[in-house]
Length: 435
Image (cartoon, rainbow, N blue to C red):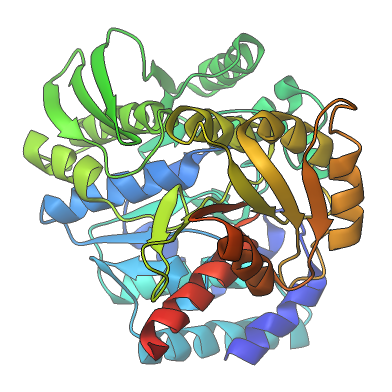
């Protein structure tokens, strides 16, 4: 099953809904058998998806979650209740979906086989139908308008943030990217928005008005008090509908306050749509959510207390949030092990991170999309001011890069790509098991 799915990856990214629409129609449109919460955004959409899902689990709702990409194991993408789907059930459903796709292609009803993401989206919908979930929390993969998940017709959704990323697919301006993300807005739905740039907000509001949808600004009418300790925020939140807190957010970083607020307002809107979600369940979702590699502190087994900070920051806005966290909680400046994909704004990311780190080791995750370490190191060196003394070097093996940094430091930060974070996290877990 895995090899069949990976073979589809050769078809790359193909934006459009024709394939996924025909595939799901042939499966009996499983996505119509349960309501969904649909979440888009440049950054924060995964965190909001995880928080909302955790709250619904705490509320006793039979809820599913679909996210991408995964860190280590494909099954991470498909969660039912509080755990990834059973591997045997995943294999059964995946083979059924892929057999259906092969048959459609053989009959000429699909001009090309589905991409990896189209296939995994269809697999998620079919898994959730067979599990008879009451609701699914679905993260958009890329953009929104032509993303495979956009065959949903959810009552409630969210756009967490809008910034420049994936410009080759979504456009070179925040307005263009906002239009793509606003593509998930359906007639009559409620769309919760995070702190969007004014230009982006105008686009989202215009699309919503055209489609008869209701927009809720997550920050509108809200009073919030926050206290930051040890990298986490404790918040009291008063919305027009309820009061929450004090609750300490499980996810680190001040930027998670905004994500938590979007999750709260999304869940409040879901109450109106018919879901029973008590205040206490929402608080538990914020305080108990597990979302690895988002400012996650991982102890290094057998090292005498050394730690790795893993963060999936993969664009300029993510790098800025990471730099803010490091500057506040690690003023001693940590060494950075970084690996990025070829299509990212490397210079923009490095510019944000340089003031917060003491050295840079450029590396690469095991994917053809990764920028070669020597090229990344050269581009990082070009951003170091002439009067600054900062060591920048390359190490092709991510695990070795981290080990070398740990040999000289007690805490190391690893960032730049979720694929890199996944490889390093897996290596650290294996190290702990072997010991």
